[in-house]
Length: 327
Image (cartoon, rainbow, N blue to C red):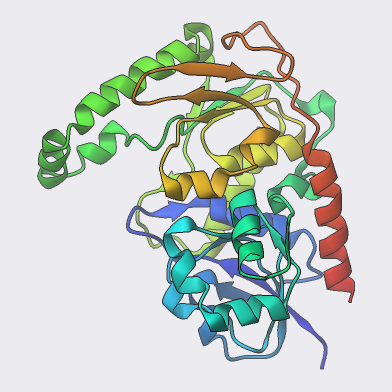
């Protein structure tokens, strides 16, 4: 029987759809001769159909009770992330044995790499598969325009519309001091991004509210964002699955890192070193500009060439995925 090929799709969390997940699947789709099966990341143990090859990239998992994948899934572990919040539930003795069987495991971040190595699982830092999106989505330099995108900056402080969506959420936000946080967020963004850029920028989001949109439409939205980022002059974001694709697309990108909790620190370890970035301490208001050969505030008159360290990771990822599909 001819081998079939699968692609990951996703179940919404209570906060809605993270389009960044679908961008990661688009990165995997570049390598597939065709997509025969859509497999939900949160229910891989339920798969009961023909044998299928599946690139296992991204965040695992919001439902650790459904880990381990079914035996008729032939996995390729690259750009794989185990979050700090679920590590003990995923890395049971059975879970460790499964990963050892399919190792070495290519890990999206250094946290996962070090975690698996500490459990005796052969693992290495691969970086994220979205670093290879140039295979399909990069455009010629002559197609680059003057659009500047600001994408979910400092999104770990909720937006005002989220706090106001119901009387209950408003009261909860008021009691928890969330409106003070929102005011502080606005002040920080105004300090980081000059008015000349804020006024002309296009603002967009990677998080959709809870919805019944089919996967086909979610993939369309993800592709539309990639096509826009590919032609942008500059992108400023706190979303890694906006920033990492921009590296692949050759689009200057600045990553705002305002994260301090264990869950976010685990997913970002190693990845933020790939970007021009601005580090923000939400408690003290301190701001550190960490660009290649620069440490001054953002300006609409400067060019921000991306660091090139990602290229080595991207080349290895491409070779690995092509070999998996061909094998």
